[in-house]
Length: 155
Image (cartoon, rainbow, N blue to C red; front, side, top):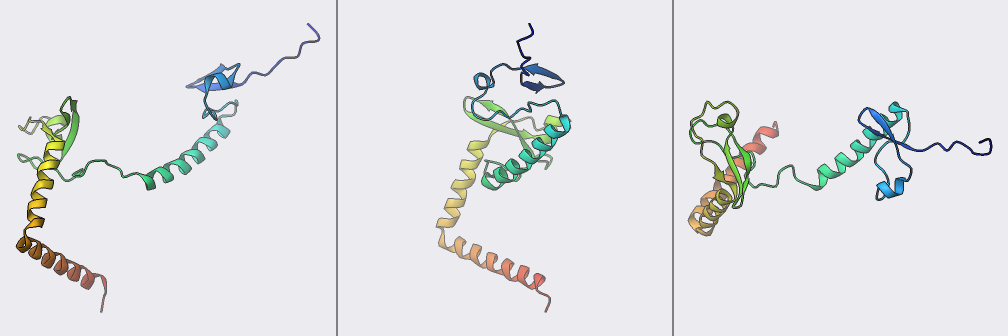
């Protein structure tokens, strides 16, 4: 048909192949995040700039971990770190990372992280409520601050 023009349909890159999309609005809500051209270098530049902009803003807004004791828990048997191992109906659990990864630690027990956090916070509350212990804590804190300030300022 001589009167009909060829319409260039937009294409979306999915992995290594391009798929034609006739109605982008039907497939996406808002602005599409996929590259719609056949130029991979342009797509890469756009993706890198988008990731740089979004990653820095998100990293400033949210902490890296939502758990209070993240990175502080240690196995009582071997001293290695504790890692999240999954959830059940009572909540998320942690276990020895050395046991999970290599099996060299004999501590196979899984602990509920929320129960550990509750115990730690209740113990801290009882220590903070005791005026004698709180006074010792303040003295130790001030002594440590003085020691750190002396190390920093060379006089």
